[in-house]
Amino acid sequence: MSIDISKFNWKQLFNDSQGKTSLQLVCGGIGFLVGCAGLIIGGLRDHSETLMMHAESLLIMSVGVMGLQQLTKDKPLSETVIEKATEAQKP
Image 1 (cartoon, rainbow, N blue to C red):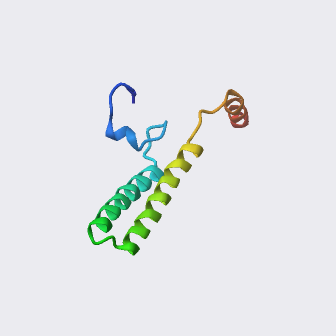
Image 2 (tube, rainbow, N blue to C red; image 1 turned 120 degrees about the vertical axis):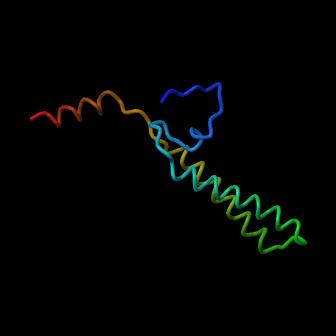
């Protein structure tokens, strides 16, 4: 799968470097959207304190999940790891 960084692609928004969908990013994105909707609805409904409090908590958690994915995202394997794995497979 070739990646063109000059074009925005929704499919690649939630994928890791191997082209697989990252569940952390999907859950974080959904939580972020629901939290934003909760803040908007809570603001429109006479500043419903409990709804806005829960929406803020959801926003903080979803941003934390997405940030954690950025810290723990997959990294390319180093040459030494690849060499050790191929040596271990040899009879």
